[in-house]
Amino acid sequence: MRRIMLGLFGAICACAALTAQGDPQPTCRNCPGTYIPNDEIQAYVKKAIAEKRTDQQVRDIDIGKSHVGIGVVHRGKLAAPAPESVAEHDLVSEVYHIIEGSATLVTGPDLVGRKRRPADLETVRLFNGPGNNSASIRNGVPHELKAGDVIVIPAGTGHWFTKIDDHITYLMVRIDPDKVTPVRDEAESKAYLQTKR
Image 1 (cartoon, one colour):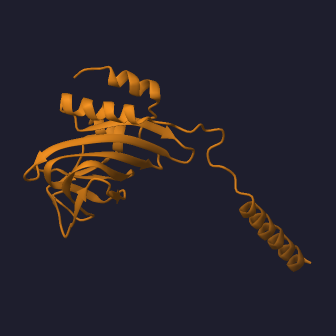
Image 2 (cartoon, rainbow, N blue to C red; image 1 turned 90 degrees about the vertical axis):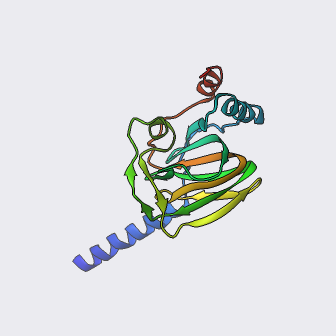
């Protein structure tokens, strides 16, 4: 009798698991879509150039199980890398879509001279969460980036601009499954664009 009950219990559990798999549910219920017009992206590019800003967060959106951040980055000419300019983020992955310009970006997980980024740093608090900087990447892979290219940088992978020909401007998508960065909506974006450095 005990074997029959255990067998029946096992069959019920298997059926429940199959039923649950056959009826997936949205991970974000009643979440609105988020539209960011090109005019707003271009306003961030202009602000970056006028105020000598590098990284700016346009939105940070809660999509249920994760946050997705949208940033705009503009970097000027770079003949040689700055000291300790390798960046690595513990929890946030990044996707770059190059809008204009060209540069050499080196990626890899083996950081040389790893140093913890200060927790109160704006980019740590608001953009990409905790991580490290370092002096270089051992056995790094160079990527020659140009307009239209896309590169995916997983959390834990160092990334390092070693050369920028004249400038590079790119849209950055940040994937934050642990929700370490705060949500930023359209109203906050518009208010930020009105500020001056």
